[in-house]
Length: 136
Ligand code: CA2
Image (cartoon, rainbow, N blue to C red; front, top):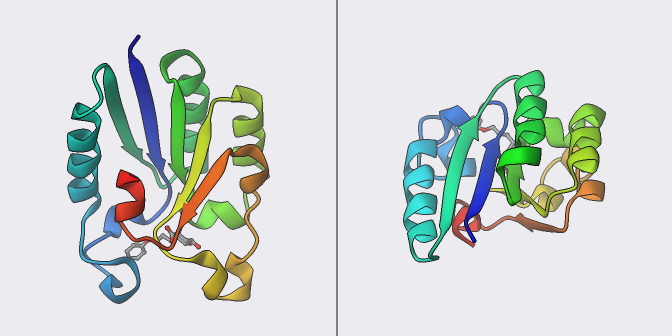
């Protein structure tokens, strides 16, 4: 059976590798997409659809699209992690196996990053492992 995984990236992650490399590392989002797709090739039948949006509305649209098109979701909601009840509600409604992912360890950063509104809707969380987290 084919397995399609949606990898959804939130606002400002399009700047990866170009700004704040000391915090987020040197890899661009395009580099990470290639690494994820290479990794998927080692799993027969698996494929990746990789997205980035700065718009909360588009991210919700992608989560809803996953209802019919994806087996699982990996999501780095970026700044919306800490603010978006609407993204939480979309994930709760769609009920796909979901991993919340953060490049940095949100628990050793500013206090406002310690709370994720999204975590209630996910099966697991990967954070603080840099771009390698996406491969895991
Ligand atoms: O660590 C993560 O992956 C975050 O989701 C990244 C978000 C941040 O708001 C979360 O607290 C943790 C920020 C993404 C911004 O990405 C940039 C990348 C390069 C330069 C500037 C911002």
